[in-house]
Image (cartoon, rainbow, N blue to C red):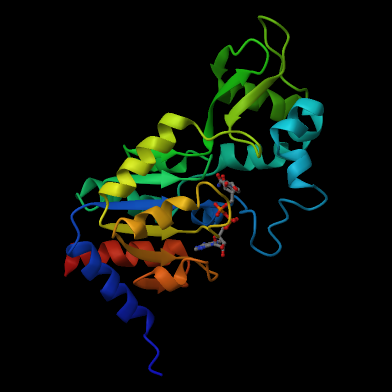
Length: 256
Ligand code: NAD
């Protein structure tokens, strides 16, 4: 069997971009690890150490014991607030600027795609820009609330009704924001190429998006350190760091 080199894979990915009319990217926590934010499933990420995800990061767990959720999320919130977009985020922003990328569908809550400059970003699992009272549904600017919590460790409460305030991130057991999900599905159906970056593709229903892309005839490029369940459906699989592979693709697109 002849093994394709990294450079050959990059060239094939670039050719797919050049032959496509509507490219969408699907991203997960792996694109942000090089910004210092741990993902969920890489060995040693530490994010679930001593925590049961279904207990700690579910809406049921949140309502039962918000302090437990906030204690768990505190270091992650601090890391996220301090994080900067890395070369992979910048490469996606550049792809949009030069007309090679229509939109990003992301599972990330870290807002690094918008901070890198991407204009069309479907945030399937929410974001930290806003927070909502789970009793009266008043909406607040998320950043000052999180910064205050990082500082004092006290669970934030609503100034209107004293209910608990929750960041606008989707916890296990919650529905995805329907309008965002529908917009992501529409973009996926229109796409003829999807580039998947840094996702284990194990969190449903978000992980249905790449499958929808293949059902509607789009080609797939996957950039991920580990194998995924969609590798056998992909046209190119690049098991390299996103912050290396994406800038290499952009460089080739702009210089060849
Ligand atoms: P995941 O943790 O399940 O999988 C991440 C994948 O990225 C792994 O397969 C890993 O091999 C790969 N990876 C890690 N570093 C990489 C790199 N530098 N380059 C290329 N690949 C790399 O992530 P997921 O599929 O997004 O699912 C996790 C869930 O956790 C999502 O729902 C997401 O909302 C949430 N989450 C978000 C953040 C964030 O916003 N940055 C961080 C942690 C978890």
